[in-house]
Image (cartoon, rainbow over all chains, first blue to last red; front, side):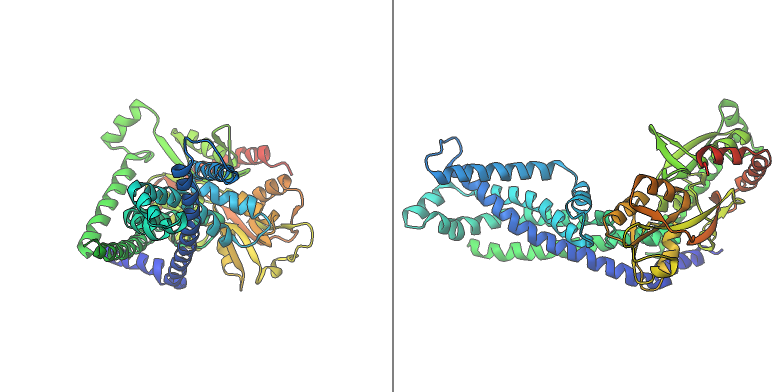
Amino acid sequence: MDFFESIAQSFIKTFITDDRWLQLLSGLGVTILITLVAAAIGIVLGFLIAMVRSTYDMQLQGRKCSKPSDYILKVLNFICNFYITIIRGTPVVIQLMIMYFIVFASSRDGIIAAFISFGMNSAAYVAEIVRSGIMSIDKGQFEASRSIGFDYKNTMIYIIIPQAFKNILPALGNEFIVLVKETSVAGYVALQDLTYVGNMIRSRTYEAFFPLITVALIYLIIVLILSFLLKRLERRLRNSDH
Amino acid sequence: MKKILSAVLAVAMLCTCVLMFTACGGNNSSAASDASSKTEAKELHMATNAAFEPYEYKEGGEVVGIDADIANAICEKLGCKLVIDDMDFDAIITAVTSGKADFGMAGMTITDERKQSVDFTDPYTNAVQVIIVNEKDSPVASADDLKGKSIGVQMGTTGDIYVTDIEGAKVERFNKGADAVLALTQGKVDAVVIDNQPAKAFVAQNPGTKILDDPFENEEYAICLKKGSELTEQFNKALKELKDDGTIDTIIKKYISE
């Protein structure tokens, strides 16, 4: 067979036969859906954990508990610490399998397990990123804010978080880029994400080149778009610097 | 772009050619292979997926089973040393076509689709695809009931390929047959389609599941080799000898007691 003819044939096998390009497209949809939901869970949950952790760090660390709320904070901080240790200490694919086969053993829908396990995984990393942002703001900002009458909550919302957010944006972007690629293990629980579709095409055509390169390129394009948007946001936030 | 692509492909092809020549090529009379045969027995790499009891599975880190034993017998006849590479089932044919492995043996059924990519030896045994369901309240009682149901399979197996053609069926493809059966016991899928022998092993380990009496599909297992490989003929010869002297029957009986 002619060299170019064989390339054309494997191209057709990979994309045209059985409408495989449509399967790739739906795989892309699943990947994006999992990423978006997991990112949303990650941000909300991660933010809450970071609040607990940084409040503890600023108010209670190295001090004795004096009022009942201190004890609650201490317990909450312990739980959050424990959570982060477990999540960061185990591979996401194992967490996903635990979710699918153990926690959601009676549920038919694998995608819920994926939303929650990727979301919970991301939350642990987001939490530490957000905490680093909050801790990076000078203590003087706190003191100044409190002395002009802001309470702790409003100091956080209006003074600390906006500044912290700008600092952590690159790290946060990093986390979401990692998240996009981490979802590629969703196939372990029979979810038809992009990597899964690529593998399936490979198992039908016995061709490695086009399916793998295509899947790699699609991930690359997602990440390129994501980094472009993040860069825009970063520039936008920097406008207020002057 | 085309130029780069063709250059990359050319390099890849060159590599596979080199690999092909360095691999055990049997009775090559060239000076190079004579020199290497003097030093030690050549290695033959077998690609398999060791999660397919009783054809191939792991026992204490070693891959054993019917296929492993037959492969060993063949290699003995050819005077080569057998090296077994364990990988995902759907990677086996790619490994063979790309020259990473000399042959693939993993309870692999001869199909027209696969024949386009690799050569098959003569079949060494027959097998059937069966349907596993839950004993209680299963919505699936025969192969016809699979329409519109969710069916668990191992990705890239013949079960997967057949089931994909079923009308309205939701196919859940797992990396391992055992995961598909686990999903069945948890009610995530309605049925699992898989080869008969591993199905028996799965059902034995999962009370509450059963194999449906009517088989889903009959098929033949064979060894796959790179297209045009000169090993195919030697393998066929060895297989015939092993069949004639009863070695293959003995091996299969060792693992499968009916």
